[in-house]
Amino acid sequence: MGSSTVHELDQDFINSFRSPATAGNRIRDLNPISFAIIMLSCSVTAIALPGPAGPAAICLLFAVLSVAAGLAKTFLPLYGKLFAVVGLILFVLRAAFLPGNHILWTVGPISISAEGIIQGLNFSLVVMAVCGAVTFFFAVTPMKNLMLALEQRGVTPRATYIILASFQAITDLGKNTKVVMDAQKSRGIETEGGMVRRTTAFLPILAPVFLAAMSQTEERALALDARAFNSRNRHSHLVSLRPVSSAEIIVVCAVALGAVLSIVGAVFIWN
Amino acid sequence: MKHKKGFSALMRSYGRLTIFMIPIGIATNFIGGQIAILLKLPMYLDSIGTILVGALCGGLPGALVGTISNLINSITSPTLAPYATLSILFGFLAGWLSKHGVFKSLWKTLLASIPFALIGSILGGLITIWVFGGLGGSGGALIVGALVAAGMDLNAAVFTAAIPMDFLDKIPTVLVVFLILKRIPTRLFVKLPLGYVYLNKAKTTSTTSAVNPVDDEDDELALG
Image (cartoon, rainbow over the protein chains, first blue to last red):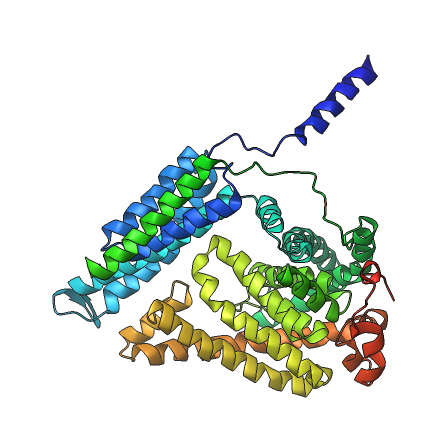
């Protein structure tokens, strides 16, 4: 009995790799390359559309899409933070320092002009729309799916390995850093106090983490060799991506067309 | 397919361990920045990995480390993406300096902080002016704002804020790079493209073992 349930579980697990990977959501199941083109078109549209309203609408669109993709919980706080920090700094500094004729009010050396406010609003919203496209893309697309899609397009596995290994290394070395920091503290290295003292604590934490990682490179070379990473034949993959549907191609073309039209509009109509 | 062959051949010409050093360099950039925050240091210290890989593997791998680190940072704060140019130059500069043995002596290393800091502040300032009109989206922009409020010209304020900040950052950075390079064991230097510099050997003797492309592709990651 026991062994048969284990066997069934194994079958489920194996079967999960027989069909293409799915996140159970239409937006998240888009091919990474198609989604990249859509997001690029959105940022181009945001740059080309006039006034504060155009880019603001694109920013709002990302928020709506994130809800539709079921990612509101992860994306909205991140995007809100970008708005609150980067967007606000970009806007406030422009509103305060850009010269203009219609001075609204003056505080000491700072004079706030109507032109400064409009320009600040335009610029910060365009930057925020482009930022939104980038952050939303990576909130939706898992890095391994993106790399798989790139590999299918002919990018060498060496390049995709470097990217994926980098993310793994950031997590691994981050964990090691905490361990080394605690170890060095317990050996009596001061991590608090004056600036000079804190600066001298930097090297004893970073150096062991770097040197340990470096000496593991040989093992990694062997591990990849054991998995035939250097074989000239086409690499096989455990996970496969869904084939691109014709509806997806139509959506991508429509969004790209929108971007082209907005550029035409920017050149001939509203500028 | 042509591109594929080009990248593989390029990576191979940089020796066998370079492909594994790049992710470590990237992670080092990140944890360097994190340790600086944990220790509440008023500097970034986030280009140590770029300079280390540049010094050990050559300019191009160093530039790759800088670019990818910057792009990964851009995922959560996309306004940093234009500054990838700086990281690329840091990588190439580190490779060039390393080839000329600069990181072998302490005083030369300390002098090397000058070009790094000048690139960081002057080119960084120019990017801030070109892309963001002088008023960027980081904490440094607040200092620029304060200087402008005190009556300084906007462009002058950008550089006045950046130059001391960058020297404060790059002097400890190159110092840490120098001290880490001192601690790398000989057996690892032997396998790295620029390791011959630190082993005080002529380039010709080590190119055959470390840099020369291996024709048999199945053997290129073998340890030798």
